Length: 476
Picture 1 (tube, rainbow, N blue to C red):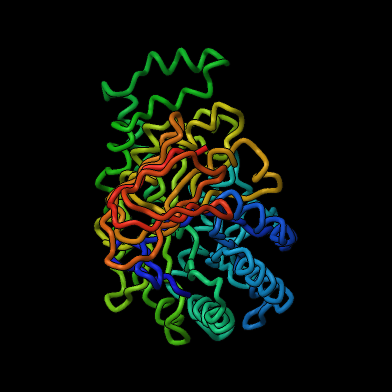
Picture 2 (cartoon, helix red, strand yellow):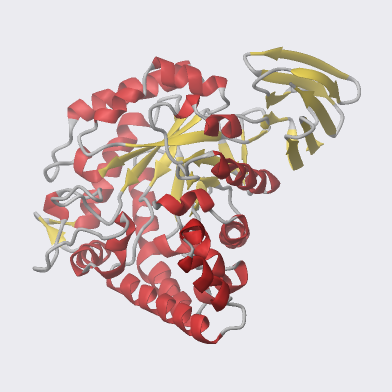
């Protein structure tokens, strides 16, 4: 891999700052949708500017029995890595989980049955949306608790099984040219203490709902009475209200305690296991589940690891419901601003591994554009969640396929895409060398302003060699 982390940037072997756009694919329980990752997927995605794949695969599929790895699956992943490299993509492996495990109802996913220690509680089928399994299900809480305590199962701690799996994957894929990194654990949940956080957040919402002048109670009741307005009732949760909720002291203290006492040691343990095998590949860590709505993420990071990347996720509250087409820009913006503050504390690069979430209808598309504008303003890389058959042919692809600086011969100060005037503007501090700056443009260009420059265009990529610190492109 020729990409390195340098401060809050990614740089290539030529010293150029890099930005990555891509998509997620979350593997189904039986792995059948991995067949979607064929030559056409990588070819079509690359033409749309998508060159990064966050490949989410559950622990259960990798290791159905303790210490027994799924060779058929690994062979399939071998082929996916090869196809990715042929089409100029990179991959980071995501050890994906949702509400710990699939159990019998297949609502969630993640851990194999042998790693589910429920202490006698029976997992519930979540009501309303799958994520409700996090909020009140003691069986799932206990599974997480045992994982964070590294409880022994089949002669080995649960985290030790997990670390051994990461070592096996690191040995297998560390030398592949398509490798980007190792995404340690999707959206960690604190377990029983996560239930306490939920209760504190709900209590704060109730108090604000009864007492705060910021909550427009009459307006909310009117919307609840009008079926045409039901999708907008959560607009009562303005950024001001959400800030008061997610930064409530009780919730943030519990989250900080978990980050320091359980999550930070986990990150260090998995990092050490991988680095024992290879120094290749980025160490990529997600924020905890509640941090997705703006609760601060603050685990101390391994002091001796320089190639580490922050992977925040963010969706509006209405995600996974029919009302998500009414996603609120201001509220989502507040959540991502909290994640930006976390990045500044860490001082490391970001690749936003999950965002979007598939709202329906034309009304949802401006939300996609709003979030991408935010990412551009912070020079963030990102992977849209998630790829499904037909994504690259639907209206969302029009918003995902937009100009961005693929490789900049220097350090980016800022860049902007004005989709109304079809103008791309890049300001940067140039390197001393003559390496080209490459800009993804899906449909070509009309003009380039970059001082004395050499320009070429091929395979949807504009190449500009210049000493100027600004490049302005009128694109088609």
